[in-house]
Length: 184
Image 1 (cartoon, rainbow, N blue to C red):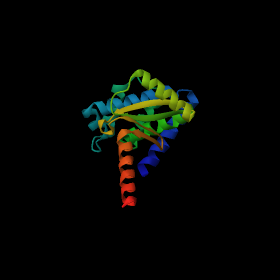
Image 2 (image 1 turned 90 degrees about the vertical axis):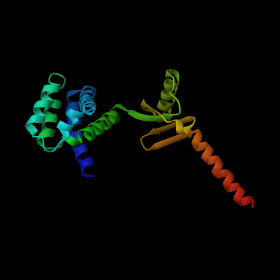
Image 3 (image 1 turned 180 degrees about the vertical axis):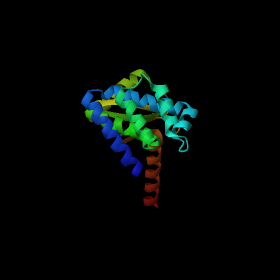
Image 4 (image 1 turned 135 degrees about the vertical axis):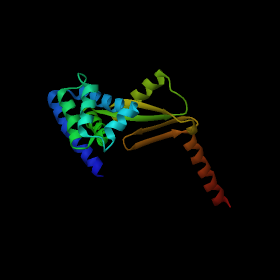
């Protein structure tokens, strides 16, 4: 709970500065680059998130790696997180920042799960249909799960649209079992 509140507070601060400077997209890209870079390199992740490594070593490393790639206030923000020993919540901060920025830009993330990869044509058609239904710009994040057998499962925020074959089979089974019991 405390982590979420801290992430929201820090994300709100960065968001306000980025919005004021008209840099919502650029700051999002920079923050996502930092998180992806740290996640992709186990040694860097260990160095940054380990509580016993001195802050100065972390700050020097972050400065060397990201010099010239980040806006000054984003770089200063990262150094502030290290000073406050809050670097471990950086991924949560970035997620919250993206949520805030997407809300203003009227963008919603749709997590789409299919049994097989979808074609570009299917992707465009699904994006267009979901945009029409939600009234928002849609960004698809696709997953493959062969266990759904076929169809599609779409999650947008708290809404879930389950058009999977496995759910339909389970529903049919429950219906048959229900009718079997009433017929006896």
